[in-house]
Image 1 (cartoon, helix red, strand yellow):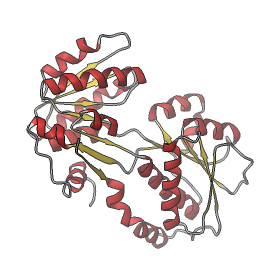
Image 2 (cartoon, one colour):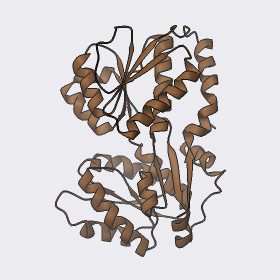
Image 3 (cartoon, rainbow, N blue to C red):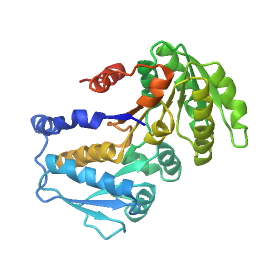
Image 4 (cartoon, rainbow, N blue to C red):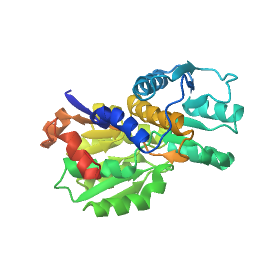
Length: 315
């Protein structure tokens, strides 16, 4: 299978020096000399380690004097240290140990953050970078790669159903007639998915519970390929399994955004509060699926800029 990958982070990677200069021109204080940054990983899984490595690499460009240490266990860390958690378990451990200290939390889902915020209201005053993509990013990718499509189907689960109204509005704004189905626990996936696929020209799927993700990935890709309907997914695994394309944030992407937020903290003494969308993302396309469906993908060199323009981002 031939696959092409694109990273918004890579396209914008050269702007880190410009970003640092802008902080100084806007009155930012110089970075703290030998500032200590503590990264707490939920465990030693590769994606947490890759996020930490990315953060360290990008931070070296933004704050060369920062001293970064990586931990998988909580420690007794000085008040002046900058704290960063990577992974949901690391977030809960850090909040339990240091409830009154500002911290940055990376590599958690938006739903986890919202659930934790109901039990820990002060979490909203801290900074979290969610790994979830805004649903509009998937819809824009569908419009860009299948410009002739008029109908678009989206299947939602018990977690993602909250996006229904937003998806309908965004889809209509992009010129789609949305067909939205909801797959609840215990439902027959075929009974929900078949009518959607039979009446649509492109399908989009959002992440949900593990059971939902497994059921939909199995049946949606089979049904859509038989019906010659392209699917836009939310992970590289979806692209590998037969989706036309996916948009998602990798550990590299999350680590880069984390480094920029840590640099801002070191320069100005604060993190911006609340949950942030992932600033950087990765696109993958499946050339074999495109060929089988008769879809002409944009040229490799042109796709990142065209997608960013469709999102309304600055080049």
